[in-house]
Image 1 (tube, rainbow, N blue to C red):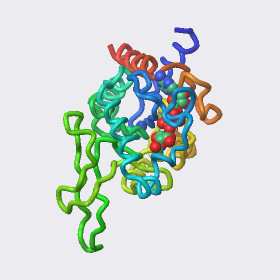
Image 2 (image 1 turned 180 degrees about the vertical axis):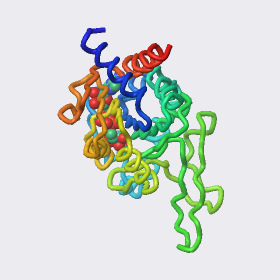
Image 3 (image 1 turned 90 degrees about the vertical axis):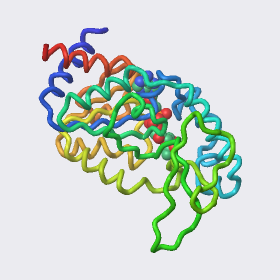
Length: 259
Ligand code: OAD
């Protein structure tokens, strides 16, 4: 590892050891080393197609079977993926810092599988089915259903409570982020002393603004990305490299310093 990168990792580790409140925002890049396709760029999920064709309420309304086919395919692909050392390092960080909040744009569930517990999922979770049936405003909506790779993954699911067709529990283009999750993410970002931003192109708002809000309230921004980091002008540290290597190196440096 280059000396400058190693020095920066040590400085970030020292800063994290002192910090009481840390927030980490992750994107698809954190799961790249698990074999999960990112969204943009070569080989990305959106390459060669408009996301709205398979990830929008309009597409679902027009052709639910086509949209479900895309999500059945994604579930089957994800079922073969396991967390990588970056996911495990973040799960360890949660246990090393008094208040650690993980905010993810990922829907793949790999943070939870790796052992992270305090996770804010801004874009939902691909393993959730959500009822699309209308319900009177004085009644609570039908509960979500969680499926696993062992469940049938190629039949359109129907709500066990009301029988209506279900949809994947993810946020689509043109939809609002879940309000409770978004509010919790904003609070964590505004309140943190260090903000880690790992594996995101930081182009989708409002999720992408979260790091900027942390910077506005004085948090140190640390970017982890093998490409020219998207927020580099706002970042105090740019750790250039794959998160599956950089995040474990940070945790190791923190552990070494306390030994
Ligand atoms: P993107 O595909 O836009 O960006 C992935 C980022 O990860 C890029 O900056 C890559 O350089 C970086 N990257 C690639 N390999 C990496 C590695 N091994 N370690 C660390 N970083 C790596 O994915 P997101 O930023 O997550 O939204 O995209 C945000 C949102 O756009 C997604 O949640 C999705 C998408 O449209 C919805 O579906 C609503």
